[in-house]
Each structure stands twice: as structure tokens, then as C-alpha cells.
Image 1: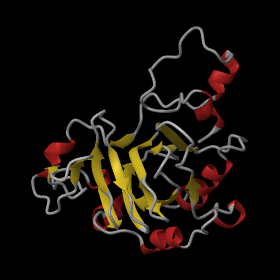
Image 2 (image 1 turned 180 degrees about the vertical axis):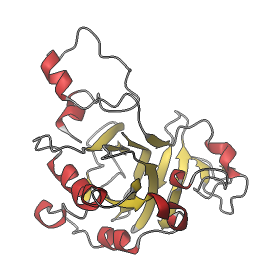
Image 3 (image 1 turned 60 degrees about the vertical axis):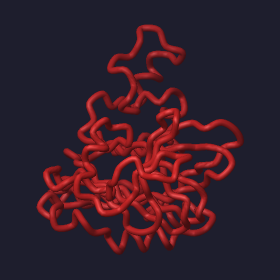
Image 4 (image 1 turned 45 degrees about the horizontal axis):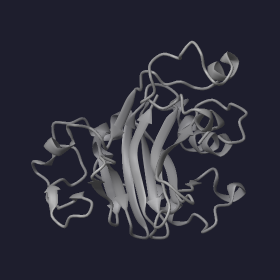
Amino acid sequence: GSGCADDGGDEMPSSPAGVPEDTVADRESVEACFICREPVDGIDARSDGAPSLAANATDDVGVLEGRDEPIWRWNLTYDAAAPAYRAVLVCGGDWRWTTDGRGRSGWRSDGANSTIRFRVRVDGPPTLSVTYMRSHETFGDLVVTLRAVARGGAAGSGRSCDPGAVGDLAGALPAWDPDHDSRRTVTLFGHRESHSLWDAAVFPAADEGDVNSKHFHELLRETVLTRMGGEDVGYVDVYVHNPKGDRIKIQSVTSC
């Protein structure tokens, strides 16, 4: 994520609404970080309402890790009464909602070339965040791309994935090269030597001059911001791809 995320994660929507009077970093550094107190939209695997969205599902995809039977039936899309922008859509592969005994819910993939799409509403140039698990053993890298969706075209595209986005993900180099891929995809590194921790990748609307967020901003600019000048963009599709078949787990996608 960005340098601000690494220093304390203040941009994450789960952070307290206020900034404490006394902080480890100086006040100037804290105020320089982007803080999202009121997200425009978000899709969160920890939502209490998720199980109730399974009424008309056709696939067994809700699984409690360590057990064979599904805990409910859910096809990873919200029910017909929900707005189109709330869609979570599997483009291909083995993505499924899972949780474990410690309540670490998320959308998980273990299969190579598996792609999932999250659609969030935006109101003006957005800052986006993707919260994902970094862990040891079987966890690996994930590839992300973005697509702007016109407000009037959301309903028609709600149940299909953009072929261009899927193609960009599949065409990402095995070893991510920023000079080649940063305007089409970014790769997030999901492996760490020990412990399992959530991390957040932040795609800032403004060029903050931060080397840690440079490529995230470039991707947002090329895929979303350049279209906002001449189109009524109301949503952004966030595509996540499993390139190698390592484990990937997404907790939430948020727009600010």
C-alpha cells in the first residue's frame, strides 16, 4: 500500500473516526495521510447480512474452512433487490466466500487463473482500497486491475466481466514489471515469512508524490480518472486475479 498505510493505516475505513490527540507520528505527518472517515461504498466479507443473500443461489460456495459442507448456498452475487453496483461476480475459477474459527472472513482462491470482480459506487474521483491477507505457507501474489463503469450502463454489465480487463490480468508478466504493466495492472505481494496479517492497497485519486503509491495512482488514472472528464462514471469494477494458484484472500473493497 501507500507509505501512509504502512505507517498506521489511517486511510482504512475501519479506523476510528477521530485522530487521537497524542500520536506516534507528528501531527503534520498524520494530516498528510489520506483518512477515509465516511466511505462512499464498500463490500466487506465480514458483513452480518451476507448469509441472508443466499436465497436463490445455485452453487455451494459458502464454506467454513476445515469443513466439507457449505454453511449456506450463495453464488457470490447479491440478490435481485440489491443495487447493481453491489455485485460480487466470479469471472472464472474457484473464488468462494470463506471464514474460519477466528472469524477471518474473505473471498478466497487457490486456483490458477481465477478472477473475481467487485463493483463499488463512486462519487467523483475516487480513492479505492483493497484489503487482502498476507500470510506464509501457501499464500502468494495477486494481480489487480480497474475499470470505470458509466452510471447508465451498470445494470447491463452487472452480470458479466469486461473481456479487456480479464485479458489484461491474464497478460500480466509472471514477474511484475512496473514499466510494462503499471498502466494496466498492479501486483500485490501476498506472501510473508511469518504470521497472517491483513494489508491494504490504496489507489489514491491524487498523485501524492509517494513512491509507494505511484503505480497504484497510475493504474487508477489510466483506467478510471481519464474517463471521468467526459463520462458520467458512477461505479468502478475492481478485478482481482490469481495468476499462479497460490492462496489469495480478499476481505473488503472500499471507495472514498
